[in-house]
Length: 623
Ligand code: ADP
Ligand code: ZN
Image 1 (cartoon, rainbow, N blue to C red):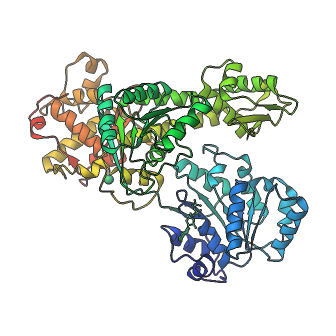
Image 2 (cartoon, rainbow, N blue to C red; image 1 turned 135 degrees about the horizontal axis):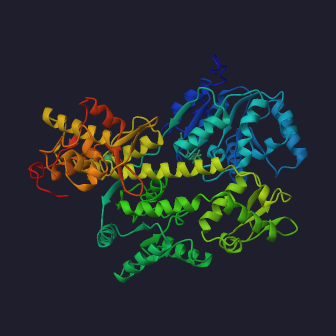
Image 3 (cartoon, rainbow, N blue to C red; image 1 turned 30 degrees about the horizontal axis):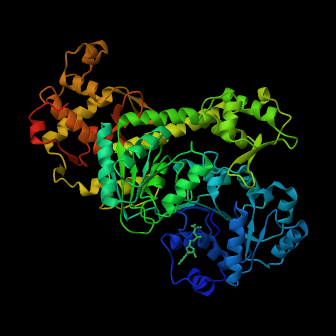
């Protein structure tokens, strides 16, 4: 898969100075460029503004031949090409705004070596004629920008991107590099697979936000949440409070207003006009606090946001970090606090159910679109209207039904000029709802992925690993360091230490008890019981529940009877926070072993825990 001994026209550092006028590289760029000029396929994940373009523009100048850049947005393409041309770099673009005669000339220019970089819109690859025209062109590098567009589970799926794997094949598999700001593991997998990258390097970098201090606070009462909001907002003044539902936004914003805070509310249930007005008030600093659902944020750029509070747990680590990341855009210190109550995961599960409509809902939506389409097979209606029209209740389910139909090629969504609304075009109007080919397996696959994302978020909330480090590792950034300013890093506590010989035995016994009460699957451990039952079993409780479930028959029954429930409950909390146990999302929180926990159960002593305090160790019951 490597292209050995490639001829370079220039060394990267020389190209940087000669063509781009930068004094050095940004974080991660040099590593990526080294890999690319060595001839490897690769995947580059960097946040927006991280300097992805240079990663392929610079190698383009080092290689003979032309670099093709696939980019989804016509406006973006034009900006990039203009910027390159201004630097004296021969670059051009080919998309639908260019007349066919001109396109042909530009293609011809590729053959004669006139361009170093050519930006191409993905839909060009639909045409065989375009692929044929590429024959005989020396494509030194094929760069796929915004590569998450090829993932059906990304937020911006473009069916044309799916074709790129085949297109690569047809033009003789030139070296290929994919770039995106979406670090989700699932999306990354899709990119590698769809493009068929060969032994690719993967670089994830630039996601750390050292100016953010992340905190997760466990709260069990509503009053506690409001106390935290009040404390954070009074201390830091400007910020965003994210709530999971519209109703909660109304409730919390009213409470804040009643305290005399200058606050706006923002959610998807408000009219376009109301939302624009609220946004304008916040951006022009006539309000200090925005209370909002996740509908708020796209394109909100108020750099002096000093705090972000999550009033409820978000549905994924991706969403959490994106929203938390709206704090401190100016680079100054900012705080992010998530108010965690396990019961709130129910709301997220409800959303997951709404976001994953069954086949019948999809057919209902399609039937309604067919009935209302105009002569052009177009429907100009909002999601809410389609929801009502199709006789459905959950507008979330409708918007994901539309996404599914678009993914399957039955419809196309487009911006309606002059309106903040997307229209729908039937691409295969001859197909009847009953004949829709819907891949029910794919649908449930998506639901499973959504649930996994929520699970990861809950695990993070329970863990006691540095927040920043946990997130960066989740995104695949290697060798992430601890941040020194999250709640975990700041909570040194002093009691956090390796086990004594005796404590180690207790931990191993407790973990064996958990193992007995879990199920082992091909993928690892699956919880079957909550902490309470497991502790009762280890204590040798005579409770009816325990006997009824047959737990008094286990070899671990009563194994830690001398310890007392206060100690064991604290120990379980410490083991969860220390990454030995995992709490799974379900109707009840179920406890099971992590991989690390399994290693410790088998004898590994390399762990540290925040050991229960003396009063807990004495068996004072705190449960
Ligand atoms: P992305 O595509 O990742 O969003 P860009 O490629 O548009 O980011 O780069 C973001 C900004 O950083 C641009 O203004 C670009 O000129 C600048 N930039 C990129 N590389 C360097 C560098 N090595 N030194 C200084 N500025 C850089
Ligand atoms: Zn930290």
